[in-house]
Image (tube, rainbow, N blue to C red; front, side):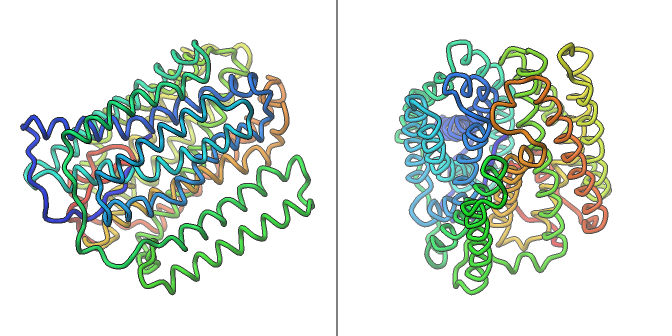
Length: 494
Protein backbone atom coordinates (compact mmCIF):
# COMPACT_ATOMS: atom_id res chain seq x y z
CA UNK A 1 0.00 0.00 0.00
CA UNK A 2 1.12 3.46 -0.80
CA UNK A 3 1.45 6.30 1.64
CA UNK A 4 1.20 9.96 0.74
CA UNK A 5 1.13 13.14 2.73
CA UNK A 6 -0.12 16.16 0.83
CA UNK A 7 1.10 19.55 1.85
CA UNK A 8 -0.22 22.95 0.92
CA UNK A 9 0.93 23.94 -2.51
CA UNK A 10 2.32 27.39 -3.12
CA UNK A 11 1.27 29.40 -6.12
CA UNK A 12 3.91 27.90 -8.41
CA UNK A 13 1.81 25.44 -10.40
CA UNK A 14 1.97 25.68 -14.17
CA UNK A 15 2.45 22.24 -15.71
CA UNK A 16 -0.19 20.55 -17.86
CA UNK A 17 -0.67 16.81 -17.91
CA UNK A 18 -0.88 16.88 -21.70
CA UNK A 19 2.65 18.28 -21.95
CA UNK A 20 5.72 16.11 -22.33
CA UNK A 21 7.27 17.52 -19.17
CA UNK A 22 4.06 16.99 -17.25
CA UNK A 23 4.03 13.32 -18.15
CA UNK A 24 7.67 12.96 -17.11
CA UNK A 25 6.89 14.53 -13.73
CA UNK A 26 3.99 12.12 -13.24
CA UNK A 27 6.23 9.18 -14.16
CA UNK A 28 8.91 10.23 -11.67
CA UNK A 29 6.37 10.51 -8.85
CA UNK A 30 4.75 7.17 -9.66
CA UNK A 31 8.11 5.38 -9.85
CA UNK A 32 9.38 7.01 -6.66
CA UNK A 33 6.37 6.13 -4.55
CA UNK A 34 6.10 2.72 -6.21
CA UNK A 35 9.70 1.97 -5.25
CA UNK A 36 8.84 2.04 -1.56
CA UNK A 37 5.50 0.28 -2.01
CA UNK A 38 6.84 -2.66 -3.99
CA UNK A 39 9.74 -3.05 -1.57
CA UNK A 40 7.41 -3.25 1.44
CA UNK A 41 5.29 -5.98 -0.15
CA UNK A 42 8.28 -7.99 -1.32
CA UNK A 43 10.01 -7.83 2.07
CA UNK A 44 6.96 -9.28 3.85
CA UNK A 45 6.87 -12.17 1.39
CA UNK A 46 10.62 -12.69 1.81
CA UNK A 47 10.58 -13.04 5.61
CA UNK A 48 10.70 -16.88 5.75
CA UNK A 49 13.61 -16.92 3.27
CA UNK A 50 15.43 -14.23 5.24
CA UNK A 51 14.93 -16.16 8.47
CA UNK A 52 16.25 -19.39 6.96
CA UNK A 53 19.31 -17.78 5.36
CA UNK A 54 20.33 -15.61 8.30
CA UNK A 55 19.31 -18.14 10.97
CA UNK A 56 17.02 -15.50 12.46
CA UNK A 57 14.39 -16.06 15.14
CA UNK A 58 10.91 -14.60 14.86
CA UNK A 59 11.77 -11.52 16.91
CA UNK A 60 14.41 -10.64 14.33
CA UNK A 61 11.87 -11.00 11.53
CA UNK A 62 9.54 -8.70 13.45
CA UNK A 63 12.32 -6.12 13.61
CA UNK A 64 12.97 -6.43 9.88
CA UNK A 65 9.44 -5.08 9.42
CA UNK A 66 9.12 -2.77 12.41
CA UNK A 67 12.50 -1.06 12.05
CA UNK A 68 11.33 0.34 8.72
CA UNK A 69 7.87 1.23 10.04
CA UNK A 70 9.34 2.87 13.13
CA UNK A 71 11.51 5.42 11.35
CA UNK A 72 8.87 6.00 8.67
CA UNK A 73 6.07 6.64 11.18
CA UNK A 74 8.24 8.87 13.37
CA UNK A 75 9.66 10.98 10.54
CA UNK A 76 7.02 11.14 7.82
CA UNK A 77 5.55 14.45 9.04
CA UNK A 78 9.06 15.88 9.32
CA UNK A 79 9.76 14.71 5.77
CA UNK A 80 6.74 16.62 4.52
CA UNK A 81 7.82 19.73 6.42
CA UNK A 82 11.34 19.53 4.98
CA UNK A 83 9.89 19.31 1.49
CA UNK A 84 7.75 22.38 2.05
CA UNK A 85 10.62 24.39 3.45
CA UNK A 86 13.66 23.27 1.45
CA UNK A 87 12.10 22.15 -1.82
CA UNK A 88 10.05 19.08 -2.72
CA UNK A 89 12.27 18.04 -5.62
CA UNK A 90 15.40 18.29 -3.47
CA UNK A 91 13.93 16.25 -0.61
CA UNK A 92 12.40 13.74 -3.02
CA UNK A 93 15.76 13.23 -4.70
CA UNK A 94 17.55 12.88 -1.36
CA UNK A 95 14.90 10.40 -0.23
CA UNK A 96 15.26 8.28 -3.38
CA UNK A 97 19.06 8.23 -3.12
CA UNK A 98 18.92 7.49 0.62
CA UNK A 99 16.42 4.67 0.06
CA UNK A 100 18.62 3.15 -2.65
CA UNK A 101 21.76 3.30 -0.53
CA UNK A 102 19.96 1.72 2.41
CA UNK A 103 18.57 -0.97 0.09
CA UNK A 104 22.11 -1.84 -0.96
CA UNK A 105 23.09 -2.14 2.70
CA UNK A 106 20.09 -4.46 3.22
CA UNK A 107 21.17 -6.65 0.32
CA UNK A 108 24.74 -6.91 1.65
CA UNK A 109 23.78 -7.51 5.30
CA UNK A 110 25.64 -10.60 6.60
CA UNK A 111 23.37 -11.04 9.62
CA UNK A 112 19.97 -10.08 10.98
CA UNK A 113 21.25 -7.24 13.18
CA UNK A 114 22.80 -5.34 10.27
CA UNK A 115 19.74 -6.01 8.10
CA UNK A 116 17.52 -4.49 10.78
CA UNK A 117 19.76 -1.43 11.03
CA UNK A 118 19.68 -1.00 7.24
CA UNK A 119 15.89 -1.34 7.25
CA UNK A 120 15.68 1.50 9.78
CA UNK A 121 17.75 3.63 7.40
CA UNK A 122 15.39 2.65 4.58
CA UNK A 123 12.54 4.04 6.64
CA UNK A 124 14.30 7.40 6.83
CA UNK A 125 14.51 7.48 3.05
CA UNK A 126 10.85 6.49 2.80
CA UNK A 127 9.88 9.31 5.16
CA UNK A 128 11.61 11.80 2.85
CA UNK A 129 10.42 10.54 -0.53
CA UNK A 130 6.86 9.50 0.34
CA UNK A 131 5.41 12.91 1.31
CA UNK A 132 7.24 14.62 -1.55
CA UNK A 133 5.84 12.35 -4.26
CA UNK A 134 2.26 13.58 -4.27
CA UNK A 135 3.23 17.04 -2.99
CA UNK A 136 5.28 17.57 -6.19
CA UNK A 137 2.18 16.89 -8.28
CA UNK A 138 0.05 19.12 -6.08
CA UNK A 139 2.53 21.98 -6.34
CA UNK A 140 3.56 21.60 -10.01
CA UNK A 141 0.36 21.14 -12.03
CA UNK A 142 -2.30 23.68 -12.86
CA UNK A 143 -5.52 23.62 -10.86
CA UNK A 144 -7.36 22.46 -13.97
CA UNK A 145 -5.14 19.38 -14.32
CA UNK A 146 -4.38 18.67 -10.68
CA UNK A 147 -7.31 16.39 -9.89
CA UNK A 148 -6.85 14.38 -13.08
CA UNK A 149 -3.11 14.05 -12.44
CA UNK A 150 -3.62 12.90 -8.88
CA UNK A 151 -6.16 10.37 -10.17
CA UNK A 152 -3.61 9.11 -12.69
CA UNK A 153 -0.98 8.93 -9.94
CA UNK A 154 -3.35 6.91 -7.78
CA UNK A 155 -4.25 4.58 -10.66
CA UNK A 156 -0.68 3.87 -11.70
CA UNK A 157 0.36 3.48 -8.06
CA UNK A 158 -2.45 0.96 -7.66
CA UNK A 159 -1.13 -0.96 -10.64
CA UNK A 160 2.33 -0.94 -9.04
CA UNK A 161 0.81 -2.33 -5.87
CA UNK A 162 -1.00 -5.01 -7.87
CA UNK A 163 2.16 -6.23 -9.61
CA UNK A 164 4.29 -6.05 -6.46
CA UNK A 165 3.55 -9.66 -5.39
CA UNK A 166 4.55 -10.94 -8.83
CA UNK A 167 7.77 -8.94 -8.78
CA UNK A 168 8.53 -9.94 -5.20
CA UNK A 169 7.83 -13.61 -5.83
CA UNK A 170 9.90 -13.63 -9.00
CA UNK A 171 12.84 -11.92 -7.29
CA UNK A 172 12.70 -14.41 -4.45
CA UNK A 173 13.29 -17.17 -6.95
CA UNK A 174 16.72 -15.56 -7.39
CA UNK A 175 17.23 -15.05 -3.65
CA UNK A 176 15.89 -12.66 -1.01
CA UNK A 177 18.76 -10.21 -1.48
CA UNK A 178 17.44 -9.39 -4.95
CA UNK A 179 14.38 -7.82 -3.30
CA UNK A 180 16.76 -5.05 -2.23
CA UNK A 181 19.24 -5.14 -5.11
CA UNK A 182 16.53 -4.18 -7.60
CA UNK A 183 16.08 -0.80 -5.89
CA UNK A 184 19.38 1.00 -6.68
CA UNK A 185 19.13 0.78 -10.51
CA UNK A 186 15.48 1.84 -10.38
CA UNK A 187 16.45 4.73 -8.12
CA UNK A 188 19.11 5.88 -10.59
CA UNK A 189 16.47 6.01 -13.33
CA UNK A 190 14.07 7.99 -11.11
CA UNK A 191 16.73 10.50 -10.08
CA UNK A 192 17.72 11.00 -13.74
CA UNK A 193 14.09 11.84 -14.59
CA UNK A 194 13.74 14.13 -11.59
CA UNK A 195 16.91 16.10 -12.34
CA UNK A 196 15.95 16.58 -15.97
CA UNK A 197 12.21 17.19 -15.80
CA UNK A 198 10.83 17.92 -12.30
CA UNK A 199 10.59 21.60 -11.30
CA UNK A 200 11.52 22.71 -7.82
CA UNK A 201 8.70 23.97 -5.61
CA UNK A 202 8.55 25.03 -1.99
CA UNK A 203 6.11 26.77 0.31
CA UNK A 204 7.70 30.13 0.96
CA UNK A 205 4.96 31.01 3.47
CA UNK A 206 5.43 27.89 5.62
CA UNK A 207 5.58 29.07 9.25
CA UNK A 208 8.29 28.23 11.74
CA UNK A 209 10.97 25.59 11.63
CA UNK A 210 10.92 21.81 11.46
CA UNK A 211 9.84 20.09 14.68
CA UNK A 212 12.85 17.83 15.18
CA UNK A 213 12.30 17.63 18.94
CA UNK A 214 8.85 16.20 18.38
CA UNK A 215 10.24 13.71 15.88
CA UNK A 216 12.93 12.52 18.29
CA UNK A 217 10.44 12.11 21.14
CA UNK A 218 8.05 10.26 18.84
CA UNK A 219 10.83 7.95 17.68
CA UNK A 220 11.96 7.22 21.24
CA UNK A 221 8.41 6.59 22.38
CA UNK A 222 7.51 4.23 19.55
CA UNK A 223 10.93 2.58 19.67
CA UNK A 224 10.89 1.95 23.41
CA UNK A 225 7.41 0.45 23.40
CA UNK A 226 8.19 -1.66 20.33
CA UNK A 227 11.38 -3.03 21.87
CA UNK A 228 9.56 -3.92 25.08
CA UNK A 229 6.76 -5.70 23.22
CA UNK A 230 9.07 -7.72 20.97
CA UNK A 231 11.59 -8.59 23.69
CA UNK A 232 9.16 -9.49 26.48
CA UNK A 233 8.35 -13.05 25.28
CA UNK A 234 12.03 -14.06 25.19
CA UNK A 235 13.51 -12.00 28.02
CA UNK A 236 10.44 -12.07 30.26
CA UNK A 237 8.02 -9.30 31.09
CA UNK A 238 9.87 -8.64 34.37
CA UNK A 239 13.26 -8.26 32.70
CA UNK A 240 14.93 -4.98 33.76
CA UNK A 241 15.64 -4.13 30.12
CA UNK A 242 12.03 -4.73 29.08
CA UNK A 243 10.69 -2.72 32.02
CA UNK A 244 13.16 0.12 31.43
CA UNK A 245 12.45 0.40 27.70
CA UNK A 246 8.70 0.16 28.27
CA UNK A 247 8.71 2.89 30.92
CA UNK A 248 11.10 4.98 28.82
CA UNK A 249 8.81 4.61 25.82
CA UNK A 250 5.78 5.71 27.82
CA UNK A 251 7.74 8.66 29.22
CA UNK A 252 8.80 9.69 25.72
CA UNK A 253 5.20 9.47 24.48
CA UNK A 254 4.08 11.67 27.38
CA UNK A 255 6.92 14.07 26.60
CA UNK A 256 5.89 14.10 22.94
CA UNK A 257 2.32 15.09 23.84
CA UNK A 258 3.53 17.79 26.23
CA UNK A 259 5.97 19.15 23.66
CA UNK A 260 3.42 19.21 20.84
CA UNK A 261 0.99 21.02 23.12
CA UNK A 262 3.54 23.71 23.98
CA UNK A 263 5.56 23.96 20.74
CA UNK A 264 5.10 27.06 18.63
CA UNK A 265 5.14 25.08 15.38
CA UNK A 266 4.36 21.46 16.28
CA UNK A 267 4.50 18.71 13.69
CA UNK A 268 1.28 17.34 15.22
CA UNK A 269 -1.14 20.20 15.99
CA UNK A 270 -3.19 18.73 18.85
CA UNK A 271 -5.97 21.23 18.16
CA UNK A 272 -7.05 19.02 15.27
CA UNK A 273 -8.20 16.44 17.82
CA UNK A 274 -10.74 18.89 19.22
CA UNK A 275 -12.88 17.74 16.31
CA UNK A 276 -14.90 14.69 17.35
CA UNK A 277 -14.95 13.54 13.74
CA UNK A 278 -11.17 13.81 13.36
CA UNK A 279 -10.49 12.02 16.64
CA UNK A 280 -13.05 9.36 15.81
CA UNK A 281 -11.73 8.75 12.30
CA UNK A 282 -8.19 8.37 13.62
CA UNK A 283 -9.36 6.02 16.37
CA UNK A 284 -11.07 3.92 13.70
CA UNK A 285 -7.87 4.06 11.63
CA UNK A 286 -5.75 2.79 14.52
CA UNK A 287 -8.07 -0.09 15.41
CA UNK A 288 -8.69 -1.18 11.83
CA UNK A 289 -5.17 -0.81 10.49
CA UNK A 290 -3.61 -2.53 13.47
CA UNK A 291 -5.79 -5.51 12.61
CA UNK A 292 -5.06 -5.29 8.88
CA UNK A 293 -1.29 -4.96 9.17
CA UNK A 294 -1.06 -7.66 11.82
CA UNK A 295 -3.21 -10.08 9.85
CA UNK A 296 -1.42 -9.61 6.52
CA UNK A 297 2.01 -9.79 8.18
CA UNK A 298 1.24 -13.23 9.59
CA UNK A 299 -0.81 -14.46 6.63
CA UNK A 300 1.99 -14.33 4.03
CA UNK A 301 4.28 -16.20 6.43
CA UNK A 302 1.60 -18.76 7.21
CA UNK A 303 0.83 -19.40 3.56
CA UNK A 304 4.46 -20.46 3.12
CA UNK A 305 5.09 -22.17 6.47
CA UNK A 306 1.74 -23.93 6.91
CA UNK A 307 0.26 -24.47 3.45
CA UNK A 308 3.59 -24.82 1.66
CA UNK A 309 2.89 -22.15 -0.96
CA UNK A 310 5.86 -20.76 -2.84
CA UNK A 311 6.72 -17.08 -2.22
CA UNK A 312 5.20 -16.19 -5.58
CA UNK A 313 1.90 -17.94 -4.85
CA UNK A 314 1.80 -16.58 -1.29
CA UNK A 315 2.28 -13.05 -2.58
CA UNK A 316 -0.24 -13.30 -5.38
CA UNK A 317 -2.77 -14.72 -2.93
CA UNK A 318 -3.28 -11.09 -1.85
CA UNK A 319 -4.00 -9.91 -5.39
CA UNK A 320 -7.82 -10.05 -5.06
CA UNK A 321 -7.60 -7.46 -2.28
CA UNK A 322 -5.78 -4.99 -4.53
CA UNK A 323 -8.03 -5.63 -7.53
CA UNK A 324 -11.25 -5.15 -5.57
CA UNK A 325 -10.04 -1.93 -3.95
CA UNK A 326 -8.96 -0.54 -7.33
CA UNK A 327 -12.21 -1.51 -9.05
CA UNK A 328 -14.72 -0.54 -6.38
CA UNK A 329 -13.25 2.40 -4.44
CA UNK A 330 -14.57 5.06 -6.80
CA UNK A 331 -18.09 3.68 -6.53
CA UNK A 332 -17.69 3.40 -2.76
CA UNK A 333 -16.60 7.02 -2.60
CA UNK A 334 -19.58 8.16 -4.67
CA UNK A 335 -21.94 6.25 -2.40
CA UNK A 336 -20.36 7.86 0.67
CA UNK A 337 -20.88 11.24 -0.96
CA UNK A 338 -24.60 10.54 -1.26
CA UNK A 339 -25.37 8.82 2.05
CA UNK A 340 -22.45 9.85 4.28
CA UNK A 341 -19.47 7.74 5.38
CA UNK A 342 -20.72 6.25 8.66
CA UNK A 343 -22.56 3.22 7.27
CA UNK A 344 -19.66 2.13 5.06
CA UNK A 345 -17.07 2.76 7.77
CA UNK A 346 -19.13 0.57 10.08
CA UNK A 347 -19.96 -2.15 7.56
CA UNK A 348 -16.51 -2.36 5.93
CA UNK A 349 -14.60 -3.59 9.01
CA UNK A 350 -17.32 -6.16 9.68
CA UNK A 351 -17.03 -7.55 6.15
CA UNK A 352 -13.24 -7.63 6.59
CA UNK A 353 -13.81 -9.56 9.81
CA UNK A 354 -15.80 -12.19 7.92
CA UNK A 355 -12.99 -12.62 5.38
CA UNK A 356 -10.38 -12.76 8.10
CA UNK A 357 -12.25 -15.45 10.05
CA UNK A 358 -12.55 -17.53 6.89
CA UNK A 359 -8.77 -18.00 7.01
CA UNK A 360 -9.15 -19.99 10.22
CA UNK A 361 -9.72 -22.96 7.89
CA UNK A 362 -6.14 -22.80 6.64
CA UNK A 363 -4.04 -25.87 7.37
CA UNK A 364 -1.38 -28.03 5.72
CA UNK A 365 -3.92 -29.36 3.19
CA UNK A 366 -5.38 -26.01 2.12
CA UNK A 367 -5.78 -25.08 -1.55
CA UNK A 368 -5.72 -21.63 -3.04
CA UNK A 369 -9.00 -21.75 -5.00
CA UNK A 370 -11.14 -23.26 -2.27
CA UNK A 371 -9.57 -21.96 0.95
CA UNK A 372 -7.63 -18.75 0.22
CA UNK A 373 -9.34 -17.02 -2.72
CA UNK A 374 -12.82 -16.81 -1.13
CA UNK A 375 -11.39 -15.35 2.09
CA UNK A 376 -9.27 -12.78 0.25
CA UNK A 377 -12.25 -11.80 -1.92
CA UNK A 378 -14.47 -11.10 1.09
CA UNK A 379 -11.62 -9.31 2.86
CA UNK A 380 -10.93 -7.15 -0.20
CA UNK A 381 -14.61 -6.29 -0.52
CA UNK A 382 -14.62 -5.03 3.05
CA UNK A 383 -11.61 -2.81 2.36
CA UNK A 384 -13.22 -1.45 -0.80
CA UNK A 385 -16.31 -0.52 1.20
CA UNK A 386 -14.30 1.25 3.89
CA UNK A 387 -11.14 2.93 2.64
CA UNK A 388 -12.49 5.78 0.50
CA UNK A 389 -15.02 6.96 3.13
CA UNK A 390 -12.32 6.78 5.80
CA UNK A 391 -10.03 9.02 3.76
CA UNK A 392 -12.83 11.47 3.10
CA UNK A 393 -13.89 11.57 6.75
CA UNK A 394 -10.41 12.51 7.95
CA UNK A 395 -10.10 15.34 5.45
CA UNK A 396 -13.67 16.54 6.00
CA UNK A 397 -12.95 16.94 9.71
CA UNK A 398 -10.10 19.42 9.15
CA UNK A 399 -10.23 23.02 7.92
CA UNK A 400 -9.00 23.52 4.36
CA UNK A 401 -5.71 25.03 5.51
CA UNK A 402 -4.98 21.94 7.65
CA UNK A 403 -6.02 19.22 5.18
CA UNK A 404 -2.42 18.39 4.35
CA UNK A 405 -1.31 17.94 7.95
CA UNK A 406 -4.55 16.06 8.71
CA UNK A 407 -3.81 13.50 6.01
CA UNK A 408 -0.24 13.23 7.26
CA UNK A 409 -1.37 12.62 10.83
CA UNK A 410 -3.77 9.93 9.64
CA UNK A 411 -0.99 8.23 7.69
CA UNK A 412 1.26 8.32 10.75
CA UNK A 413 -1.55 6.83 12.85
CA UNK A 414 -1.96 3.99 10.34
CA UNK A 415 1.80 3.32 10.36
CA UNK A 416 1.93 3.40 14.16
CA UNK A 417 -0.99 0.98 14.28
CA UNK A 418 0.86 -1.45 12.03
CA UNK A 419 3.98 -1.09 14.13
CA UNK A 420 1.98 -1.84 17.28
CA UNK A 421 0.32 -4.91 15.75
CA UNK A 422 3.48 -6.50 14.36
CA UNK A 423 5.25 -5.93 17.69
CA UNK A 424 2.52 -7.18 20.04
CA UNK A 425 0.51 -9.88 18.26
CA UNK A 426 3.27 -12.54 18.33
CA UNK A 427 3.96 -11.76 22.00
CA UNK A 428 0.30 -12.19 22.89
CA UNK A 429 -0.06 -15.48 21.02
CA UNK A 430 3.22 -17.19 21.90
CA UNK A 431 4.84 -16.86 18.48
CA UNK A 432 8.51 -16.66 19.49
CA UNK A 433 11.88 -18.15 18.69
CA UNK A 434 11.81 -20.56 15.75
CA UNK A 435 8.08 -21.29 16.01
CA UNK A 436 7.46 -19.75 12.59
CA UNK A 437 9.32 -22.71 11.04
CA UNK A 438 7.00 -25.28 12.65
CA UNK A 439 3.62 -25.51 10.82
CA UNK A 440 1.75 -26.80 13.87
CA UNK A 441 3.09 -24.20 16.30
CA UNK A 442 2.70 -21.36 13.84
CA UNK A 443 -0.86 -22.35 12.98
CA UNK A 444 -1.89 -22.32 16.63
CA UNK A 445 -0.49 -18.82 17.14
CA UNK A 446 -1.88 -17.64 13.80
CA UNK A 447 -5.42 -18.65 14.72
CA UNK A 448 -5.17 -16.87 18.06
CA UNK A 449 -3.87 -13.78 16.24
CA UNK A 450 -6.78 -13.90 13.80
CA UNK A 451 -9.25 -13.71 16.68
CA UNK A 452 -7.40 -10.73 18.15
CA UNK A 453 -7.41 -8.99 14.77
CA UNK A 454 -11.13 -9.71 14.45
CA UNK A 455 -11.66 -7.95 17.79
CA UNK A 456 -9.74 -4.93 16.47
CA UNK A 457 -11.92 -4.75 13.37
CA UNK A 458 -15.13 -5.00 15.39
CA UNK A 459 -13.88 -2.27 17.73
CA UNK A 460 -13.20 -0.11 14.66
CA UNK A 461 -16.73 -0.70 13.40
CA UNK A 462 -18.23 0.26 16.77
CA UNK A 463 -16.09 3.41 16.94
CA UNK A 464 -17.21 4.38 13.45
CA UNK A 465 -20.87 3.91 14.35
CA UNK A 466 -20.48 6.04 17.48
CA UNK A 467 -18.17 8.84 16.32
CA UNK A 468 -18.48 9.37 12.56
CA UNK A 469 -21.09 11.80 11.29
CA UNK A 470 -22.52 11.75 7.79
CA UNK A 471 -20.72 14.82 6.48
CA UNK A 472 -20.79 15.53 2.78
CA UNK A 473 -17.70 14.66 0.79
CA UNK A 474 -16.72 15.66 -2.69
CA UNK A 475 -16.31 12.95 -5.30
CA UNK A 476 -12.72 13.68 -6.30
CA UNK A 477 -11.68 13.07 -2.69
CA UNK A 478 -13.39 9.76 -2.37
CA UNK A 479 -12.51 8.19 -5.67
CA UNK A 480 -8.79 7.71 -5.08
CA UNK A 481 -9.23 4.40 -3.35
CA UNK A 482 -6.51 3.48 -0.92
CA UNK A 483 -6.65 4.87 2.59
CA UNK A 484 -3.10 6.09 2.07
CA UNK A 485 -3.78 8.14 -1.06
CA UNK A 486 -4.46 11.74 -0.15
CA UNK A 487 -5.66 14.68 -2.18
CA UNK A 488 -5.66 18.31 -1.09
CA UNK A 489 -8.83 20.17 -2.10
CA UNK A 490 -11.76 21.87 -0.39
CA UNK A 491 -14.23 19.76 1.58
CA UNK A 492 -17.25 20.32 3.73
CA UNK A 493 -16.09 20.65 7.33
CA UNK A 494 -17.76 18.62 10.09
